[in-house]
Image (cartoon, rainbow, N blue to C red; front, side, top):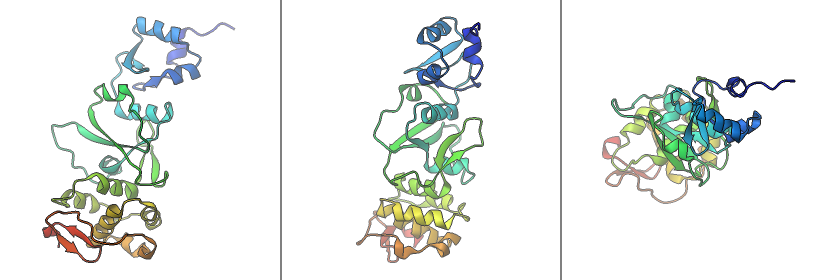
Length: 252
């Protein structure tokens, strides 16, 4: 049987804007020599570090993340504010600036060079975090043509607490909390029981309590380890005696 021309084999399953790596070429029976031939013929464009797009395709950060997760099998996921905004909770990106995209890595590993050295139209923020010991609270984002893993809203708000600078103000955090009226109690309970940060757990409960979020009625706080002693969150704040954290003065 006559083999299909390289161009046909290459583009038969290559979605517009998709990013592919050597692992993908190999899985489709396309040799390094054929890849080089396609580069010379300007059918594809190299992004660096063994990643390619079709010639004239636009760079799409969601396509890039899909490739990082699916083809490279790296434990990265969309987290924090970005995960919340993709799920409709909060839209506070500053006009005129590249939108921040928060990515959590569960292990210390290098970010692929092609992900950092190309202009994806967003500003990636990478953070290595062991806030949670497993994949609890992660989900698939299916509202784009490139499906990728991101934090549920329950996990994302805790990741946001973990990386935000709260020493002067809780204002940004509060705006995101205000959109979280229907958090799932069972998932919040599981996340709080498995969270490694006393600060995150106390601040979450403080904010949920302050805003009277319905989820508070579904939590068993006796099963959540909150540690002992005071935690200084806001350096010049007042002590909230319920959760033993210092909070901005305007919050009391």
